[in-house]
Length: 127
Image 1 (tube, helix red, strand yellow):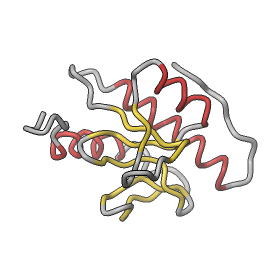
Image 2 (tube, rainbow, N blue to C red):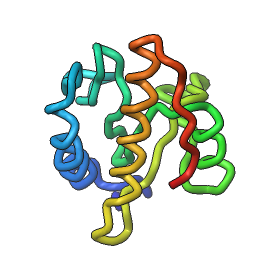
Image 3 (cartoon, one colour):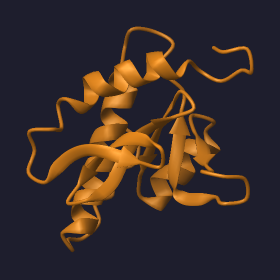
Image 4 (cartoon, helix red, strand yellow):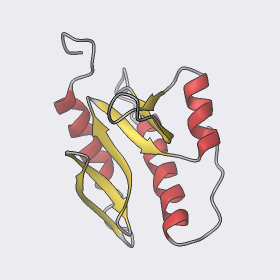
């Protein structure tokens, strides 16, 4: 953690880059600029990035609310007072197990792919 209590951006970004590599071969998935960061996009729609040392993902509203209520995530506010209800921030894993981040990026990719392609929204919930 940094002096201000935020996770280290460089460490989180390195983990994100490692996990993002699994997505780049998928149809329509790219990585590029997003809110002064670099994020995963499908058909031009953002679904995952690292901000202030935390993973930020777009999930179905119910899943985002569940993660927040259980204390596993905090709502994403790109700037004070601008709360984004389907977006949450998740701290980096405390151990070498990156499974939670991997699953959340996967869920976000599936969700935004369905939205971008006009399909019904997948409803996964917790894994």
